[in-house]
Every structure is written in C-alpha cells, then in structure tokens.
Length: 174
Length: 125
Image 1 (cartoon, rainbow over the protein chains, first blue to last red):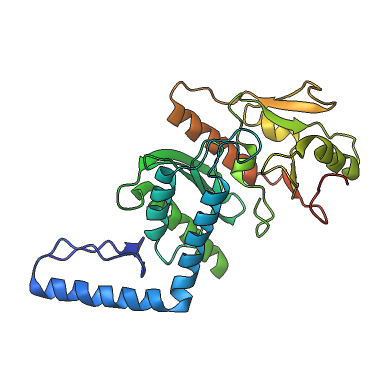
Image 2: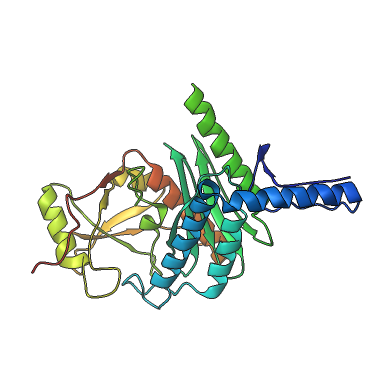
C-alpha cells in the first residue's frame, strides 16, 4: 500500500517531499515521478520564488536578532537551534498555504504569524529545541497549544492552517 | 505590525521579563503629543530603537477583558503606565502559551487601532 502525506487538508502540497512507506516497484516509480514533478515546480519562478523569499526573510531576521539586546530592551539572541527548526518548518509548509510574516521573539525564538481576516489568525513561536508554542483564533473560538517539530509541521498546526485557509476560501465565495 | 492587514502583530503586546509592559496613558492627548512622547522616551541609541513606525491605541477595556490591568506609575516619565496581570504559570511553556493567546487576541481586537505616522518618527536633530 502506498501512503502519501504530501497533501494538506485534502489540498495538494506540491513543494513538500513525498513520503511513502511502500516498497513495491510501482510505488517507487510513483515516488520518483512525484519527486521529478516537485523538482520541476521548485525550478519554476512562481512556485519557488515565494518559498525562497520567506527563507531569505528568515536569514534577515536571524542576522538582525543574532546578538544580545537586539531589540534595545535586552532581548535574547536568536540562535542556530531556533533558526534551524524554523527552516525545517518553512520548508515543510505546503504550497497551498500563504506564507507567514516572520519576526524574532524577545526570548530568542522565531515567530511566524498569519492573518486571514478579522479574528482569524495564527501565531507560532519556534524554540531552539523545536518546540512550537502556538495560538490561533477563528471567529469567537480561540485555541492554544504546544507541540514539537520533528521532520514535519506539528499536526495541530497543520489542522489549524487548514481550517483558516478553508474558512478564507469559503468567505471569498460568499 | 502588519501593514498589509493594518494590524499590530501579537509580539507587540508580549510582556518583557519583568512582566510589566510599558505603555503611555494617552487619554486627552493630541496625536502629535503622543508621537512626541514616543520620540522622547521610546527612541534610543540601542539597535531596534532608532525609529517608530507605528503605534497601537489600546482602550483599557480591551485589557480588562483579558484580566490585565493598566497601572499608571508616571515612572520613568509622566504618563508612563505598566500593563500588569499577565498569567504567571510556573511552567514556562504554559506561561508562554497563555500569554501568546492573550497577545493574539489583543492583536485582533477591532477596538485596538494601529496608527501609522506619515513618516517614521526619528530622534530630533
């Protein structure tokens, strides 16, 4: 059986790598084909440029916040741990999700923010151990949580993004 | 701040390590005087304090709704106010999570207005 989680809440994520637990020859061929398509898309300006931009932005944020007191109020420096996990997070973001606004937290973590409309937003803070602290709201409902990045984005955050993206799409149709 | 959405970002409200978020009591002040207080007391030589690109005008009601208190202490300058009452869980992760949730709500509160000056506020020549 071939399983792929290269989809995002039912929407295809074209940039994230395919993951398969299958070993059969047809399954490997499908994986290879999918990887070729992914590489092709990453070479295209439309798909790779926004992803590249956000990684460049991460480098800029990291450079700006790399020393003690970078905010003028004694903030902790943003270290290689938080930077590395933020990079993993951003690389794993499905292409169907809008890119976040990036900044550094005063405690040395990387902050990712999405605003989808009034009272529709998600904020994620990524720490040096891969811990993601997050809060999000959709209308009158508000949620918060903590989870860890391993080699992919924590499921609860993927689910939150999915709900916010779908809500925005539904409101655009109305 | 997010210029695209005309909203302050959640980070703008996150309290510093002493748990007292510094703000200014602006009731009754004309707009230019509010910017002038920022110019005099928020700007400095330290990195990150060279200009002011915007401010959030926060009604006290918005703080009270999140069980926060605005305490005017006039220290270190007249009208200086501290926002206190942030969740104080012993678990630092839980504390951060609770505070982030409050900051996110504040950033999305329609009663809180983002004000952007015509040009960034810089130190007087």
